[in-house]
Structure formats: structure tokens, C-alpha cells
Image (cartoon, rainbow, N blue to C red; front, side):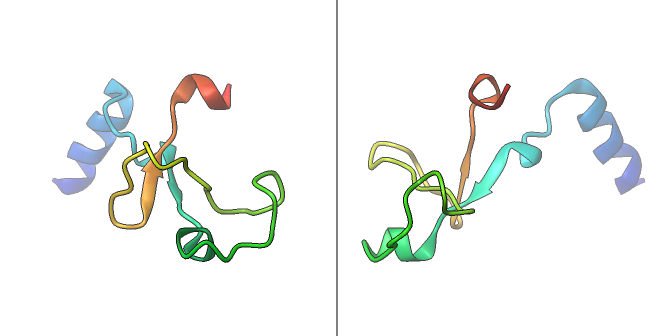
Length: 63
């Protein structure tokens, strides 16, 4: 039954988990030496909410 609910959410476009990016732990400690473009993790600005070490990207920003 849980698989059916997850599939329904995906089909309805309500599941935003695929838009979530892990935030760079070193960046959060101000110690990441890589530029934003070279680090495989997110470097969100201070005004972006981080939840459980992840941020949700705007769909339009990744088109």
C-alpha cells in the first residue's frame, strides 16, 4: 500500500524529494575550500532554510 501512495504522489507531482540536495557539511562550518560550482553538495545562502541537512531546489533553477 505504501508503494501505491508513493507512486500516486510522484504522478501528481507532489513529491519534492527528488529536488532535495544535501548541504555541504564543510560549507556549514565555513571550511569548504571548493567553489560552489565544483562541490557536489549544496552551498545555500543564509536566507535559505536547511532541514535535516538538506535544501529543496527550485524546479525552475535546474531546468
